[in-house]
Length: 526
Image (cartoon, rainbow, N blue to C red):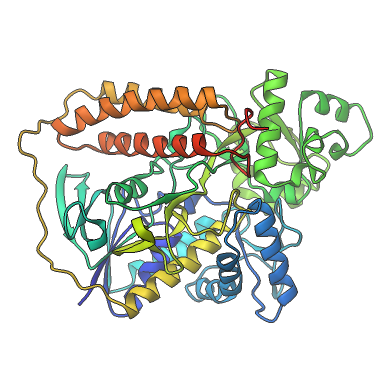
């Protein structure tokens, strides 16, 4: 019976696992920490989609908004496929027990930046957590699925070493509990490891977002695409002694407004609505509800001009009772710091949020290698993949939708076209390797890496800064490679190796671009 290994336990990995297992195949889910330690579990906003398949106008508007947000670089065919399959995939989620917010018998639909209509299903402000709950329960109750927590995918096992055209037949994993390397054979490997937000000092991503799947596939010969497009969420809560915390775009969809210090002072001494004083109108007529690339740059530039560490998200002109009811997760987090919705201006700033580029895949999630050919036995789904859906800038709440649509397409492709392999695979060789006793160089290198990416490969870039980053990344890569070749792998070492590689791919792509589109903005390009 064909066996599949899925790396990652977010919405894409869990959804695909259920689909493949329902098809009668054995599935092993490998996940680095607990199954709930995923970006899905932290997703607040929701999943965009039109449930009524006869609503052609609604679908056309969703397609138009997606392409507009992607600044002309979306693959229109992919966008249409995802939007048209949205209703069926959302119904799949409902059948698995996902409970979205309702107004009596109808779903309560939210609106976020870049959307021209309300089309986002949500579970208050904890949509990802609700989806993760329902899918995890279904996975745990499925006889054909095995969950392997605390297991880190390290590298893919090629059918013929050095020849990506021959495909993949397994994966080497590090059992983090016992520090043992294990070779797991697989007729197919589905990579669903999410993004690489840990490359920057401020990120809304969980600690597991270190680009592992992207890096291991690239080392095996996979193509990457659009790596320069890193989405920074404009509104992450910034308070001392706490990590950045996402403030969902839906709060601005309900009327929250961004102000700088000057605008806040004017608003407090005026009877005008706060929108009247928002600095965001200098960057877009849509103000605080412009697309994320525009709003993030507006915040970044305003903070630099004013010499401040934050701007302010104002909600005191809104109904506080309604806000507390619709955004309980945010309110709970704010209360840690004696802040409250509908009362206090919230200190926010952009933080690394979503990897728009990634492993190049076809319409079935198959990873593409040189010659535009799919690599047999290897799929990528979710944030780790670049499908062409998002173009140069992801439209809010399209990520969960893309994840379930492509998880379904990849699962169906494997079930209908099983890739049976020779189960004899090589074991990990550690001849001459020693236990890594001193981790402090890794800690310092990681700090250097994050500072380099934050300072030189952030929201606003320049050729001088990008070239500076490239030189530093080459040095870091050489140092990490020296340690890698002589040390038995640890989680810290594996993650640093992956992060340095992904940072280099992002920087190289940014340097090669000759125009500003979406999330890539180089001030040297006119």
